[in-house]
Image 1 (cartoon, helix red, strand yellow):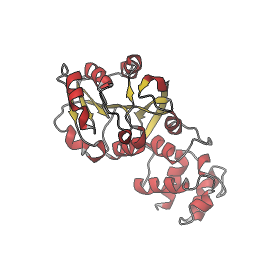
Image 2 (tube, rainbow, N blue to C red):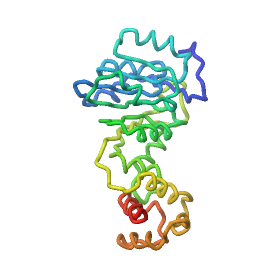
Image 3 (tube, one colour):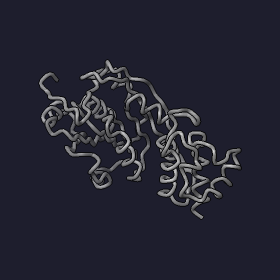
Length: 263
């Protein structure tokens, strides 16, 4: 794509290794009437493979300068529809109304600069998704999959693990892209799971964010505006007190604290 002007504002690094593209898609167990969403189609290398694997593909691409390139590369795929718009501004449920499907998937090489807002939009859309498989910056992927007590463990880890079972699939070298980014990438899969009951989900998310507000501070300092007596009562059940840092607590404890404070 020597004739294309890559735009930093869109975080454009196109995957050029066809083996990686096939590896991302080939292991997905597809339902009989499948629909996959791709966010950030780029030049369509992944889109093309998705088109041969799924019944229908709904792609989003913000850069209208790629329209001719995508239309040309995907001309043999009548089951692929690309919406040239900002995914973050779309009403996804409305976009899906025209499709008849029994299995919804999301498979994407996400733009690094808006990875978290995209994931939050997907979660908040309350879609019944069988699998989310995304490529993200390796450092970000490590945070998604982090274990309790590690320095990578943070509010996004708790947020995601409340909603999904997170699996680290494999690393993708920066040499697999053009232009070549500064860092390697990671393929991560999100599998739906039964959520732990929380009385007030919005309050739970706020509690988690506030708990990690200052990474090196204790819960006593980060949660000053909350009922600390109730929080400590829950912590003591697990052998902790208010001097604990948020990175030591798993999602179950945060859910229990949230429910205690929501009484």
